[in-house]
Image (tube, rainbow, N blue to C red; front, side):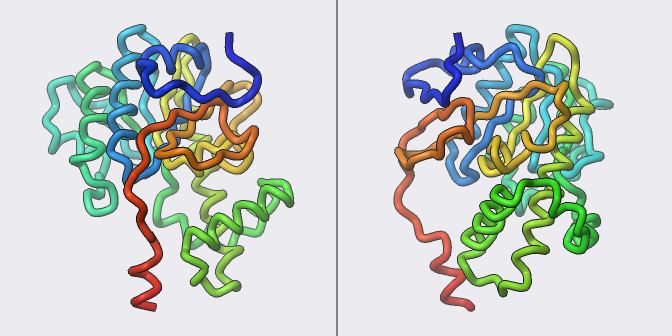
Length: 252
């Protein structure tokens, strides 16, 4: 029985058991740390586990824009065909990292679809004041702080609100894709950064009430996670310490 509070699965627990503990659910949101290779391995294993028990409806990806899909491809499609179908951006999302996740679904006959906001819509999102009302005041303030720190505190303050609107629009777009892909008795798997799977700020805030979801944060190391933000935290070994802002600050 799932505990009502956030649970941390032991590192030795197989992925199939961790995923099964969160089922049944219409959507399983896996939030990764993008540079943690073990997280992409977990994503592939989750795909395989859900395929094995016949529960996987579709794999939706932050790493591809909405409107792209492999649904028309055969199970023996080449990796080049799959990348073309998803309009894959290898520079932003290395195929060496995410290809095994995608191909595990394709080989099983499960569609892989883009879920992220189309880049062409981002400019409009920046000026869309209606997006400000999509989150509560406290959640919007937290999202603004995440945008501020995520840009190494170098963004002009005048850009914080527009950039936050893009984040909200991206979360809403992913939620809409997940809701549309819902299949009774099965689970939509959304693969994204952990910020998007956050129940307080991200995709879950925009899902319709008739779409059940469980949110997982994959955490490299033992950093604290705020209560209520995720249904489960799956910890992996810590990565070497890295100052992600060092290069940005030197060039600014």
